[in-house]
Image: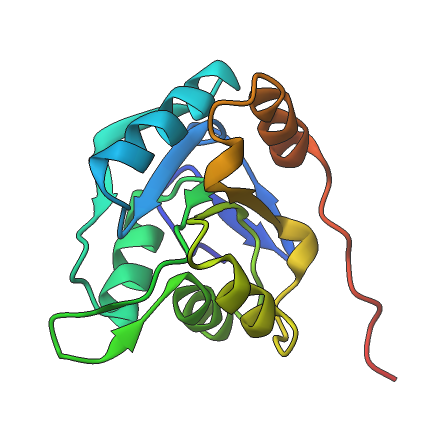
Length: 169
């Protein structure tokens, strides 16, 4: 069954990566101050970020999911920060991941989620009550953006096989 573009297919809960294996979709990016540092780390990790694969800041969760699936990249850069979308609803990185998870009935992507120092406490609360497969989400605090080991952590996260949930009884 084909879900994305001609180059990415889902088989069970495993994302088969071909042309877009190292491509990154940037979903509702942070300000340039944080984004440029994060993109530099992604490039050090061997990933590519195209300015054409950016979901606009004011996109609704539904619009963001549609664009993400159209871009077809296996890696997502999804900042946590909350904002109002074009419809006036408050959305954040977790609400987007939940919408993507509901759409696919899985989360086959590798997600890198930067969070500002201010947003870290809110993210902790949000993650404590989520159904998302958190092994696929790498949290990066603003204080880690200049750490030389971050590129290695990103690369390890992207290359690590996703755990598979056991079938329901």
